[in-house]
Length: 430
Image (cartoon, rainbow, N blue to C red; front, side):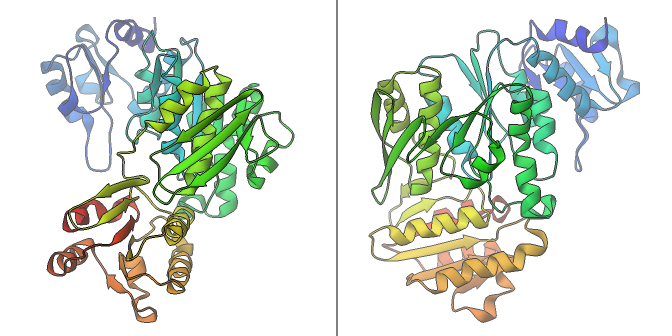
């Protein structure tokens, strides 16, 4: 019996995997990973003292199979192989979701819909990378009927690797836009990486859910038959009603119809909602259950999230940002019929050599509009401060000082920026 099989025998009765000793429960298997600023091997003894039933280490000196401490030269690779081993023992559909924008919202909506009929396991928080996907796979218990896996990428080939681990049977790409250009090198690199999901599904005769309105995605299909959604000529068609502070969708599929009145803001969420409806219909969730699931979903993850403070109404959309999502968010607030509109925009990170150009495009676009105030923060925006009559701040701390000293009141404020800018810090001043 090889080592992975030995660990799997333990895992079958103790299906908790942890890479963080601060979150350890009894009967957990601790997997020691190395990062830039930490070494999980330093915590193996602590993990066992806290009640772990086994540990995996890349420190040969800690190896002790009699005490269930197992050695691998590369513990990350072994974690991925172990997740794939578990996946191959699961006889359930796995739905993979990737895309530049909207993948987390779409994942959340699909999870809400399918959970009306099935026992599901889905990606939690932002566990969508080369570590998060294996951990999500390993969180799937024996009674789960469907897995829903979000896949993120910022370098070429990452989606291919994640597909090889998760072995999805179904999948969708929300869209393809200009993000992580630093890692991908070009927009063509983004297309190539995102479409690795389609490549995997085609090769393995999987089911693709595809946005029929998206020319790039249609071209990538290259004739492969898919389950389509869109405004017309699709398996599931829909019409969007953008009601300032929420999006509603009237939909039709063969003899089934429905109406969703969502709590999501921004008509760019139309595609995310329609994707969830389509997946639900494919898996035979009833129209009423679909409509109720999506209508009752309230975002709480700083994506398309509307909130009201004592002084202002906020559109909190600062979980992340790229040129595509930034433009859509700005277009949305422009459309809203509300006096006193303001913007607080943070840098869009990981754009590489395209960074200055993309930040200029955003500033040029809002220069043509009549916002009450525009605050922009981050080194990339700050470089352009001499060319625009906005409030520029090099660091978020500087913006905090400004907002604490000069209270903004009775405004509708869009807050949008990359996660690394930490715009969550300013909400308390609004």
